[in-house]
Length: 625
Ligand SMILES: C[S@@+](CC[C@H](N)C(=O)[O-])C[C@H]1O[C@@H](n2cnc3c(N)ncnc32)[C@H](O)[C@@H]1O
Image 1 (cartoon, protein in one colour):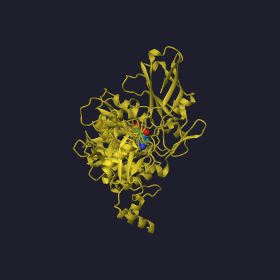
Image 2: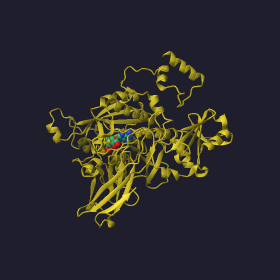
Image 3: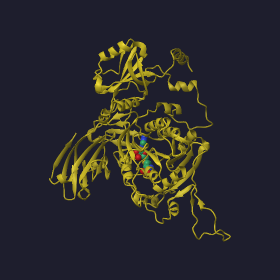
Image 4: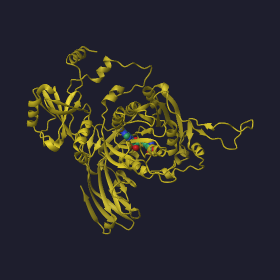
């Protein structure tokens, strides 16, 4: 360590080291030098690899905002479908675990089982209409590994002490992932590499001048050596005899670690594979029977099962059928609506056949992208709680010279301003506050309020060496208090991009795009022309995306019931563009009210309902802001 660093650390220690954003803190990389972590015998080294402590400390927890609950209230647990980046969502789940709110059937806290099928490391590039680079996001190589590793660290923390995790990968990154999994869970907690045979003869396979790959890899790790394993067997066929002619004893053949669909079918006594019933249309959807095997083996009824890359909701659907509790997280709206629909149209059997099954109550939450109007209308206590969570403050009410403070943020006092009663905050308000609490508050004080409540622009006002920070909601405009730039959610605009990793940091508020349509009724279809599309999302440091290029997709419910958006189909922006910004809705599909959801690439929606009865005239024009 050089002299300058030594001097700086000495100064910081003298002043009483604490975390702060104004340069007062000990940079984390120095902490590593001061307290070097124990070196492993071997480890995977790559650029940008953070320490586990850093990952856990730096990940923001984003509160869950309830969007809607399906089924009857009145139970203390709701299964959870969460829209948002899983890293931040898992940090919030971790707080729930600490607060005793994630408990399995046997009373043990934590998630009992995690299954993930993360996107594989590919590249994507969105291009704008004049071939200008409209949006670019590439996660490959080391970046992908670090993306995955961060999430695995959170998953380990979330698991119950006797929990299990299954990580589904393909051959491209599985070897690197194995190394990382060993580092995180411990090589001795690696249980099995499961081979999932996927191969069917396709055109590609007959043409490829190479060996034919026909399997995925699933790594099975446990948090400790004490784990649940409900062993299953493939029953012997009735006419099976041992060599000596005797009837075999026992339950059958133990299941091995190479699985394929036909073997599972044998177990289920189904001769012909049929996944038709369970297909949701979501690309890369996995089979229910795969999840059935994993969930029934590594959890018990009533246990919590988490899939943080939910996609089409296979894990949630099977967990529901097997009487487990579930948490499903996805960053894509399409995945969320697909899962929502799936949970509302379940059938009892695996492969989604048999009698209808009403799912137990589940709640859809937003985590990181919030509806501000709804927040604003929350009762004061709920608002106060949400606001404290949003800025990662501790709920610790206290008084300073009689002035009510609501919590603590990194050791400093936080006041949640009651904009319902107290109006607005001017520099004079701050001066008055300072006059009453003076230096007793320390050198910083945070004030949380909606953006409109502040009558000044600065991030903080300083008086006699005390800084009064304005924590504004929405937050997208402040850099001051964060070590990293916020980055938004990204929604795919092409089917090819559906299986991409997305990283969102921070939180924002829904800002519906502006959409203008022209509808033309034809014999077979209603043609919807998108005359105007404009995203209202404002991102610091990002170029504004030109109008139509900010469209991700249009999702359609042909038979909207006035309450729940029940996804029937989705049109990706790339296809809509090829069709001159038109989508065709077949007349035979249109039942009553059609609900169209226009999604921008940041996850904001504009909804437009079209009433079949009013579609008789040609060339009707609709506008929506
Ligand atoms: C391979 S798919 C999962 C398919 C799923 N197993 C099924 O059976 O349908 C991967 C999913 O991960 C989601 N995803 C990517 N990055 C994410 C993130 N940071 N947080 C949450 N979900 C993410 C994608 O939106 C996609 O739906």
